[in-house]
Length: 81
Image (cartoon, rainbow, N blue to C red; front, side, top):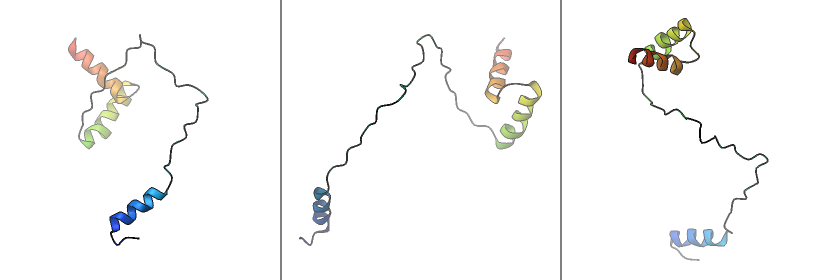
């Protein structure tokens, strides 16, 4: 055994067998979305805490939107037209 600590570590790791991941076959294959499916792009942005959790949520509830992103999308389309 050597006094060099790095050599000791290398010897220790060389003695251990290499660990390989065993990949189990999936019971159900992952579904691929159809090519014709139009995925929405994501545009992350931040809002002040009170705007997001107080004002935006109240507007979503008032207008009966499914979600905040749905409400904002409708608002943008409405303003664009």
